[in-house]
Structure formats: structure tokens, C-alpha cells
Length: 371
Length: 248
Image 1 (spheres, rainbow over the protein chains, first blue to last red):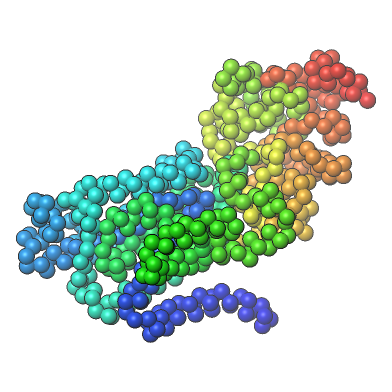
Image 2: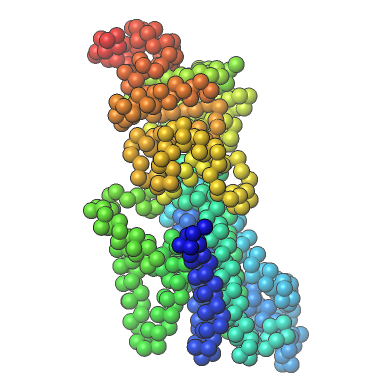
């Protein structure tokens, strides 16, 4: 192998390792603990973004309800942390969480009980979102529901989930959500070491998710996802059943969201319905659209940038951010449908073809079109 | 040996009868041309065989399997492949990847995820045979209209079906491309069973031996090109005002 070929071949892995090392070793030195904690939050959203890029960017499934899967992961972890806090609380009779005591409960509800164990909580944070997404995906894709209908269904799911959480206050903590998590598995979460460990775990989860999804997108299965996005009916005549192919991608994207939710809770210190409802779900997709939904790295970067921008602008001029975000979204959809990651390609197409709208079949125009 | 047997097939859309009591059999190795004026039911017939349209009545039997209620991908898995009037190839993928996906549908899910995507000899051979080898690594979006039709045929061959259903494979092609496609069809027909829907009389005369004529959802005539062309009913309904066209 020649030297330039070797460099080309190693460029990807080296960039990845470089970013990983920078995130793990350099950022903690540059950022004060408060900012490092914020960065960890953004990275959680980047994990969600990877999932959305897989389901939406590759598979054409507009996942407008990923707040639900993020929330399921987050609540599984938050319920465990709440129980862990109650177990050490001398004021808590029968080790019940405070909000249950106030609601008049005398016994732990059945679905809280398994979450006393930290390992069960982690498993639940990953498996419950996956199972819910797999069930929803399988039943819906089998009926050939797609496009806008699928997106609306996702939104409805997010709305219903929030209504359920708020309505069942005695079981879920209601609109206040769950908060105050001092310990995990006997270790205090408030020490700098614990905070760094959480940050590092998030970085490593993000890296592992990226590598896994990258492998998936490069496999035959990944090509098949693109084929289904651009011509689902044609794929049936290639002998494949699109139902399982789409369900798998959708369920995996929910697993990523669940993992992100579980990491987010001890980092943020709170989870509540307002963090996982319809609007947060839309924001998650928005960040992917702006970063570039066809690129995993673009989507993750978009999530970090959007959330960082949100914090920065909210600190300086609070109300303006919403408008700026809306404007950004309109600009990206109208001028750069491939997002920031696809700017060069969009520009090249615009220059080489005078009327790209008519000659370039984008996935949107071909999705659902019949062969 | 009978490969495909259609008995009493009727398809209605609301009050419109698209296919009306069709009987048709294909033997292994046949090259059958299906002709008929617009609205005769040619594409509906192929759609019904491949599961895209459900029969209202009648049975379709292929190689011992009853196809009536199977879904599209199951029918493909019994050994039937098809192309479409307007070719649909996957433009975001390369030409080779299009063929590779068509060749890979028998892989298990985990094999689709883990097997290295090195180019298989199946894909290489088919690209050579169809003449698309020089374009293997190009995006399918860069192909000309004729090349796209060939890519569809290449994808069809990669599926290794026992029965190929081609819906107007030479529509919109130049004279030169038609000749190439015709020669290709003749060559493929040596080891496949093929049904071709075609409008083009000139193409028919050059490449067809065995022709079935559909009209208003019924089988009007069947035989070799000369027999069909001299059939007065065919001249009347299919060739309309200009019966001379059939014999010139």
C-alpha cells in the first residue's frame, strides 16, 4: 500500500480516535465542571441524534417522537435513583419516594419494584424503549403506514406519553418529574470524580453508538435501508420484506435514545415531562436536520451545536433564540436540505445543475412514489 | 413442464373489470410476448401474478405454489421477478450495489448486517453480461434511460428467478438500444422462462415467436406472430383502422 493510500485509509479512524482523546482528556482541562456538565448534556442529545439519523436519514422514517424513548430510558434511571435516595432517607417511611407519601401511597407500585436494582434499571432503560419502538414499528410498517402519517403517529405517542406521566402523578411524580439524585450504586453523584465519570461514560457511549451505526450504514442492510427510503415498493420486488428492515432501524434508534436518557438523568439531576414531550421531540429532529440527516457525524454535531447555541443565547437574550431557531430551520430546509454536513454537496449540485429541484430526486420526492 | 398456470382469473376495480376469466399457461423455457391495446389488462395481469393486485376470482399456480394470497416478497422468493414500465433503480446507490442488493435477498438478516460487501462473482458476471461493467461504480442516477432499463434486467437476473416478467423493456429506447435489448432477451431466454409486454410491432416481428393477445381483459388470440397477425379479430381490435400495418 502506498503512503497516500495509507493516509486516506487511516484518516477516518485517526480522526475518530483524536476526537475521542480530545473529549476525554482535553475538554475536562479546558472547561470548568459546570460547563463540562453542560457538554455532557449536549452529548446525550448527540446520541439521540445518531439514532434519528439512522431512522430518518437512512430509513426515511421521520421519527418525531423520540422524546418518548429518551424519556423511557430517563425515567427508568430516574426511578432507580429516586428509590436509591429514598432508601437512605430517614424521613421516608417504608423507603417510599416523597411524592408517593404525599399522594397517600403506602406501598411501592409493582413496576417500581424491579428498579431497586441498578443493573435492572440500566437494562430497562435500554430494553423498554427498544421493545416499545419495535412493537409500534412492526405493527405500523406492516400496514404500510409511512411518511407524514408515521410522523404524526410519533407526535401523538409523545403527546399521550406526557399526558400519562402528568395524569398519574402518584405513580410518576407528575409534571414536577423526578429529581434530587444523590447516589448511584452506593456512590455519591455530586463529587467531581462522579461527574467526570458520567461525562466520560457519555463520550464512550456516543463513540460506541457512532461506530455501531456506522457499521450498520455501510453494510448491505444499510444500503437496503436507503433503497427502502427511496422506493419501498420496489424493494418488495427484490424479495425483501421492508417491515423487519424498518422495524430494526427504528428500534435501534430508540435504544440509542433510551441510553441517552439514562445518562442524561444523573448528569442533569432532573427529568420531567416538559423535557420529553412533543416540543423536545421536534427539537431533536430539528438539530438533526440542521446538522445533516444523511451524515451520522453531521447529525451528532448538529445536536451539540444547537443545544450549545440554545444555552448561550438563553443566557444572553432569552426570547430571541426561539425566533433564530425557527429561522435557521426554514433556511436549512429551503437552501440546504442536506444540512451543514452536506453543504458542499448541495452547493456542488446547485452549481452543476441549473434546476436541481427538477432533476435531483431527493428522498422526499421519491418516498412513497410507486414504481 | 408447466411452470405457471392461470385459471379463470378475474380482477375488478369497483365496477371496472380489468381482467375477465383469463386462462393462461406457461411452460418452462417459454418466451411469451403479451400484446394488446391500451387498457387491455397486460400490466394488471403481471401485477396480479406478482401480488401487487389481488385477484377477485381464479387461481394462479406457479411451480406448485398457489400465489393468490401471498405478499410481494414471498412471490419473489418462489422464483418470480419483474420489471416496471418506468424503471425504478436506486439512484443513491452505485450500479453494482443495485445488482448486489437484488442478488442478496436470500441472505439472513444477520448476514445482511455482517457479511463483507466485497463484490461477488454473481454481480461481476451479470454486469459483464449486461454490458454495464464499465459503469459498476457509478451512481445509478448517472445512467441513461436505456442503461437504466438494462440495469433493471441485470437486477432481475441477479435474483435468479425461474420466471421473468418484463413490462415494456424497450419503451423509449433508440433503435440501436432496442436491437441490443432484443439480442439480450433472446440470449436470456435460452435458460429462463420469460413473459414480455411489448407494444412495438417491429420489435415483436424480430424477436417474438409465441404471442398472446389481450383485449378488454380477455385472451383474444394466441399463436405465433404470423397467426396472430392474420387473425381478423386481432386486426380489428388491436390494429384498428390500419390492418395493413400487421402484414407489412
